[in-house]
Structure formats: C-alpha cells, structure tokens
Image (cartoon, rainbow, N blue to C red; front, side, top):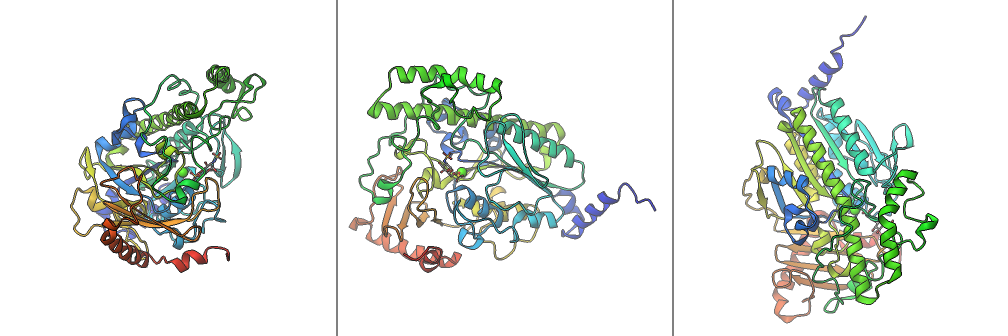
Length: 520
Ligand code: SGN
Ligand code: CA
C-alpha cells in the first residue's frame, strides 16, 4: 500500500501537538535563530557604544538591538570556548556538565541538552559552524561542524558522513549553509532552532577576501590601559601570557612574515592561488614598510595593537554582513515574524585593555559577552536591560519561549519575563564564575568568584591562593585590588558569605574543584 505523501508532515505535526500543551501554542511556537560568534568583544559591537563604534560599526548586528533588547550585563560562567558551549547546551555549570576546559576529553553528548528537549517537543534543530566539544553533536537533526577551531580559508567540515573541504571563506560558507538549511525546513510545518556558530573573529584573525582592505589604513583609538603594569594587583595578572607586547606574534597573528616573496604568508597553504594573490597584494606592502623601519618599545606595542585591530575588526565586518544576510533572508521569507533572533559570543575578549588580547579572566572585558535578542511582538524595540543575566540562562530561555517544561536540574533563569519587558522582583543580584584551564596556553591561573552589580570578589585558588576585590563603581577598569584595604572590610565579609552561599546553591565547592586536579 502506498502511504500518503503528507504522512511525514502529519506525523511531525501530531507529535509536536502531543508534546505541547495546546494546539494553538504549537502553531505559534517561535522559531529560534541563535547566532554565536567566537571571541567577539562587546566593545566591538556598535550597539554597545564605546569608542570603536565610529571606526568599525556593526550595523547589521545592531539591527537585532534596534528590533529588540540589548542586555548590558550578560556574564559567562567560564570564559573559554568549549566550556561556554557546554554551559549553553545544558544550562548547567562546568562542574556539572563535565566540560571544564578546552582540554576536556569530550562533551558527554548523552546528557540532557536544550536542543534535545526542543527536538522532542517537535522542533527541527541544526548546528552549523564551530562546535569545539570533540564528541559529535547530539540533539540535532542536522549538523555541519568545523573540526576543532576550524580554518578561515577553504575550511574542512565534519558531517555525519565524514570530513570534507570546502572552498571559500568560513564566515560566508557558514552563512550560506544556514540559509540553505532554512530554505529546506521552512515549509516543514515544524518550528526550527538553528545555531549559527561563527569561527570568526577568533585568533589568528584572518580577514576574508571581501574585507581585506577595509581597515588597513585606519588608526583606532587606544584603550587607556594599553600600558597597564599590573601594579596594585597580584601574581595572576602579572604572570599571564596574553599581552600584545610579549605574547602576540608578529608572524602568525599579525601576518608580518619577513620574507613574503618566498610565499611564507599566513594561510597560504590552504589558500587558492587567487586567494593568496589577493592576500599578498594587501599584506606585502605592510610587511615591507614594517621591516624597512621596525618600531621598538612602546611604539612597537602601539603598532601591534593597530595591526591586531585592523584584522580582528575586519573579521567582525564579515560576521556583521552574515547577520545582515540572514536577517534579510528571514524578512524575504516572512520567517522574521515568528523568529527569535539572538546574537552573542562564546565570551568577551580584550582589545588591548590591560595590554591584553584573549579572555579567561573574570574582568569585565572577557567576563561580559554581547547579548542582543529580538522577538517580534514580545521585545520592545530598542530597549535596554541592565539585569545580571548569563549564558547559563540561554537553555531555559529557549525552552520557555517554546513552551517546553524546564527541567528542575537546569541552573539558569528563563529570560522570557525580561524579554517581555517585565521587572522581575528577586532577579539575581550576583553571579558565580569558575575558570579551570591552567597550566595552559596564556597562563591564566584558575579562579572562581562572585560578582554583584558593584563588587567582584575573586579567588585565585590552588596555584597561588590569592584573593582580589574590585569596586566597579570607583574603579570600573579594575586596576586596584582593595582586598586588603580596611575600608572594604565589611563589604569583603559580606561578599565572602555570598560567595559561600552561591557556591552551595550551584553545587560547587573548594573540595570539588580540587578533586578535578591531579594530586599536588
Ligand atoms: C587557540 C589560540 C589561543 C586561544 C585558544 C582558545 N591560539 O589555542 O589564543 O586562547 O585557542 O580559544 S592560536 O594561535 O591557535 O590561535 S577558544 O576561543 O577556542 O577558547
Ligand atoms: Ca572563544
């Protein structure tokens, strides 16, 4: 007997209806487009204002803020890629989801995640782009991921069928793949949840063919703490390995290969001859100029900062175009009317503040991540939210928006009431952080801590056992540890108590942290 051609559609519809509280809800459940880039500092999103906005605006990403809400204090629980992704998927802190650092063996894909729960509730789900969790994705009807960090030019992708290379620039390829997938599922009768995960603007900041010349002659404003000497703080700040001055490499990072003529330029081994020619036509003159009269000392740091910004921001320009392209697609197809769009990054990043690049520390530049959300008919255009929110909240937010029951073991809070513009009495007044990756690249020592609106108490435990306390009101750039200042005794005591309480709340403790370590 031949089955009806409509059978798959009917089946998926009925399963969606069964798993939801009412037929009406099912038909109106919103699509979710989650766009996440890698290492995109909020200082480099023009919707957040700040000095870079006039030099390197992000008009398309800003469209999400114009249509919806800009969250001004979205804090990550562990400022590093794999762990951040695991937290987003599970709605649980690293010590519970098991992916503590980028060096973790693999993400346990058998555990509960929000994509699985959405899938069960009738959503079609996909992830396209950076994954960084080693094991293959679970809970997705479709996945095409970059291996590890991925490559900028002619990247490899891993799918259920295996690994293959594609020609082109990674940001553009991911965008086209996402649009193709949307076009395939948009009439399926099911709501979708798509995670579009860009590799850019991750180190080594290789701009795409269409942005190579964008900022090459621009001089960007320097951050006031570019020449921070870390006085007034402890060993953790002094002993890291992430300064523009010492750590940033002239060749791989800044593309200043000494002998460009011999074809040693970055990425050449993956580039087509045409891509390499376009690359060299931009970089070779820069290289020649640099080695003809190489700057030294502070001037070299200034030069490196400018080169860094030129490439980093050019990578972001491609991400911004990607966001524009996908927003336009939603509009053209009418999907925009019922799609929640989220823009965020796996963490923040230093753009020369404290003399640094990279992330990891519980200081605002890397602890805070951009978060813009629009939800037609729900979010008020151009609104701003100043509550402490977190990537811990994403899973619950998406489940709540989809009308799916939130499991009691998830640890975040649904942002849906905030998206509706409600004042939520009793909203969290503090946030817990825990970073584990040490010894490792960039040498940022292990630490945990608590942040309130005004204060931050940080414990660099185990490796050095040092405490730091910052008053964000009198010291927004976090230049002075006041832990031993008697004027802060009362605050310090209170924060210690609150830290103890919040660790208990989330099931973390010194003992647990130490149990993850090899014996000393
Ligand atoms: C690579 C980078 C580091 C970066 C980590 C983690 N070095 O090792 O600078 O901190 O990734 O980044 S590179 O020379 O290979 O680019 S993360 O965003 O994936 O956590
Ligand atoms: Ca990252």
